[in-house]
Length: 271
Image (spheres, rainbow, N blue to C red):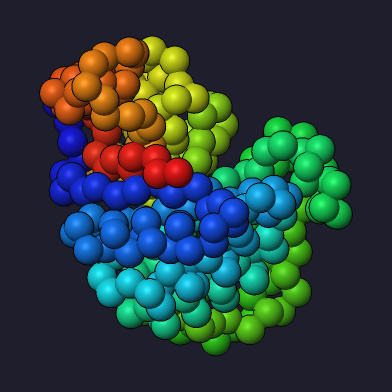
């Protein structure tokens, strides 16, 4: 089984509910104490029952010591990429290099438009994400003294000052499922971050193949792109379905998923 040469790491995927705003924070702190590698939060700014993900991540960074933090994934359909870049670099500096950037093209366009953001078609959203990645990397390139200019179809930057540089090389992970997004992941991103629950049998292997092919076409090694996977379920006394049963069942099913899809990092969902 190809593993792309990356160490296997583990993390949590926490729903940022605000009914008791301390619960997501406590789950993140528990993840830190247990020695997990990454704590992540979904991002739905139009959802009134959720805490704002950027605010929560900043608070969690101040309340934890060693664990890395990421959106899973941040909605770039509602967030201006230049501001995302500066926010990400700032949080990385404040946390001592513990921020990683998971982003997506956006979904739930009725809700997004209701909040005042631009409604885009799926094809437009992928194009906007590609431009956004260019802008984010350009802002982080603080050693380049020339003003940043990006004249995209969806995003324009007219002479923005670059910086600050983050504390470490922040990876950009994409939440991707369709072919064009997968190809963008292989060509421009540092990682693939899908959720197993949204995938059909064979999608992991097909997705990895598409990413690998796009990476090679872009002059990259497929090993440059880390593979991540969100899994959800419950550990119970008896089996009631996939990832719904005893710990031994989880071990066998995750091993099987790894053989089929060559996954590298796991994020159990926490509610």
